[in-house]
Image 1 (cartoon, rainbow, N blue to C red):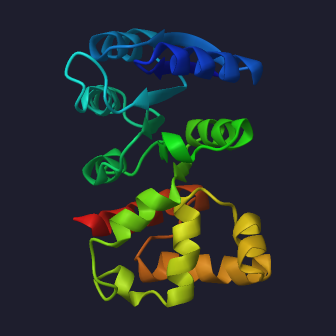
Image 2 (image 1 turned 60 degrees about the vertical axis):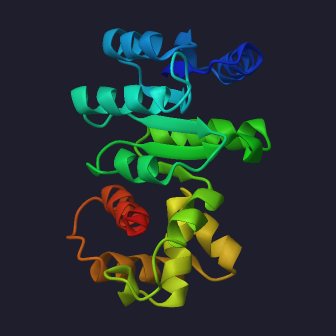
Amino acid sequence: MRVVLAEDLFLLRDGLVRLLQAYDFEIAAAVETGPELARALAELEPDVAVVDVRLPPTHTDEGLQCALDARRARPGLPVLVLSQHVEQLYARELLADGTGGVGYLLKDRVFDAEQFVDAVRRVAAGGTAMDPQVIQQLLSRRAADDRPLGRLTPREREVLELMAQGRSNAAIAAQLVVTERAIAKHTSNIFAKLDLEVSDDDNRRVLAVLAYLDQGH
C-alpha cells in the first residue's frame, strides 16, 4: 500500500515513516510543505494520503487544502488528517462527495501504533476513522432535534457515533454490551431514517457518517 505523508516536523515525519514501513506500507513520498504535497499527490497517485493540516509556507490550512484539491482531481482519494486542533469545516468538506475513505485524528490522542495503523488501513479501504473528540465538537453545533438526525433514538445516535469512529458492528456490540444482531438492527434503522437507499453497506456507512458530521453546519 503506497502512502504519501505530509508533516512539517522532522522528528514526527521520520517517526511516522519508520512506523508505517514497519507495518509494510510503502512510503511513496514524505514531504514537509504544501507545494511538495500537491506535487506528490498529483504525480504519485498514492493509495492513501496522511496529511497534517498546517504546513509551510502558510502554516494555516495548507495541507488540508492540498488534500481537498487532490480529491477534486481524483475523486475518492483516501485522506487521513492529523491535526492538533478540530477544524470542523474540513471534517465535513472531506466527506462532502460521499466517496472515498476519510479520517480525522488528533495528534495528542493517538496512543499506540496499532490504533494509528488500523486507522490508515481503514481509510485506505474506503472507511472512516474519526476521533471521538472531533465528533463531539461537531455534535455540539446542533440541537438534538435537528433533522434528519432528530429521527434517531438516543441508542441509534450512540451507534452512529461509534460508526463514525470507524468501528465494526462487532466492535460496537462489544462496547455497548449487546449482540451483533441488535447492532445490525440499529444500523438498518439508521439507514432507513436517514433515507439511505439500499446499496453496499460500507457505502451506506460512509453516507450515514456524512449525515452525522453534516449536522455541524
